[in-house]
Every structure is written in C-alpha cells, then in structure tokens.
Length: 131
Image (cartoon, rainbow, N blue to C red; front, side):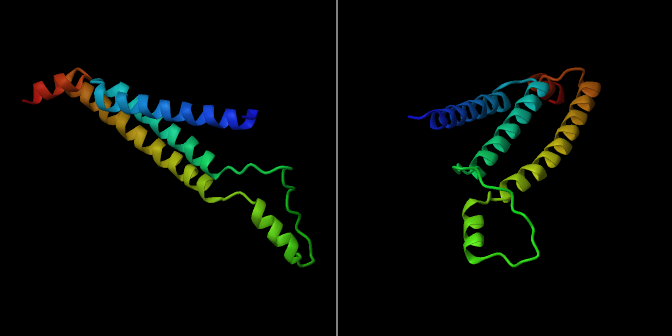
C-alpha cells in the first residue's frame, strides 16, 4: 500500500472513530454542555467526510484554467471535465457550517436559559425537577 492510500485509510478511520465517539457523547452523556460539544464535533466530522468524498486524486495536478478570447477546443473541454473537482461538496459544507453555527448559538442560549431556570445542566436532574 502506498503512502497516499495509507493516509486516506487512516483519515477515514479517524473520522469514523470521531463520529462514533461524538454520537456516544450526544446520546449517553447527561450534561447539556457535553452534548453540545459532541454535536459540534459530529458536525465537523461530517463536513470533513463530505470534503473527502469530493476529493479527486489526479496526477499530475491539473493546471488552473486560463480564460482566453478564443473558444476552447473539444479536447480541452474533455480534459477539464475529467479533472475538475465537484463543486457541490464544498458548497454544501459552507452552507452547513453557517447553519451549524446558528444552531450552536441557539443551543448555547437554551443551555443558559436552562441553567438560569433549573440551576443545573444535568438532564436527569432537570427531568426530576419538572416532574
């Protein structure tokens, strides 16, 4: 196995390990703050995974397309299409980061309100207090 394939394999394993650990934190931990942190890690891991899905291993690296006044040839268009990176995963990740930030701020606001009302951030204690 060459070095690049090994690094991709290690990266995929690390991403999935982080996803499993963050899901454990979301579903098992009683503290609201720990759940919010685990949710943030989960979102970041899914973003990294989406970027890795859109990555293409191209040797040699493609050149930047230069805009000319002439029409490009059919061969140039075919080469560009075969080596171009799919723009959808980075666009989805950018949108997801913005939505994730807004969601995280809302969850932190809810955690602050829960602490003001109940005096704790432990889900088990909050459920007991509410009856």
